[in-house]
Amino acid sequence: MSVPTGLRDLAEHLADTARSIVRDGRDRLAMDIKADGSPVTAIDRAVEKALRDTLTREAPDHGVLGEEFGPQGLDREYVWVLDPIDGTKHFAAGLPTFGVLIALCRSERPVLGIIEQPLTGERTLGIVGQGCWLNGREVMTSGKTDIAETIAAIADPDAFDAAHDPGIQRLRTATRWNVWDTGCLGYASLARGAVDIVVNGPNLDPFDICALVPVIEGAGGAITAWNGKALTLHSSGAIVASASAGLHVSVRKLLAAA
Image (cartoon, rainbow, N blue to C red; front, side, top):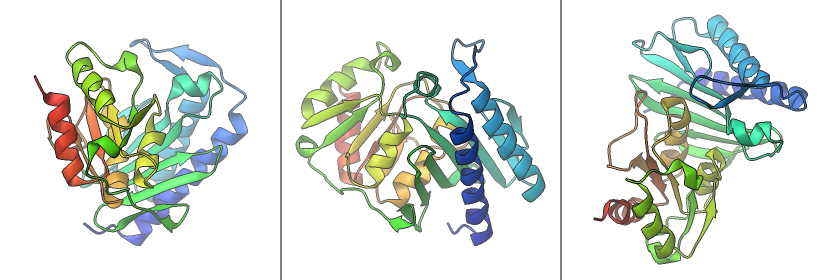
């Protein structure tokens, strides 16, 4: 599915805006705890507000779903999905293992995604059916198919409940080696071939998920829910991404094995 050049340019402009706000404000980490127990900083809110203001001016007929300020116009053809700081706990702790997620969905399907790391300046942009780029340079997954040769990036162990943990334990022993709690940056690493599998537990919402889909698919990988369902504007829960379609089948079987 093609994405108009103007919308790609708008997505890049949103990422530029987010980068500037995070860099300017990263030392001002006033933090609150939301009703669900998760942290939120002033920077989370500032980024999302700035991106929403831009979209109101530049794409007033588009919908928006953001983590901090809720949904607007989700029934529209185009909907932007925003996670102003993905990995707020890491960000609030002064660690660089976080990112800004920006996605564009068309008819509920994610078609463009950006994983922006504001401090390092690394921006991974994917478009379904067109490709994936790291700072303008086209990248691809490793394409590996043998799970014994792979590196897996596995989410925070606390993210896996009793129903999901057995599958994770099987996966971690089947791979060559593992890294942990990489957040959205693990998916950027998969897109450029540095890791081969990324797995998250059931604690994800649409704004955690949508931007990852075009990045992984644009780079030649596969990404679904653990049960194999396609990921959409309304998806939540556990997801898994792999460097190839063949590897994805093997990983999903391992995660789901009785």
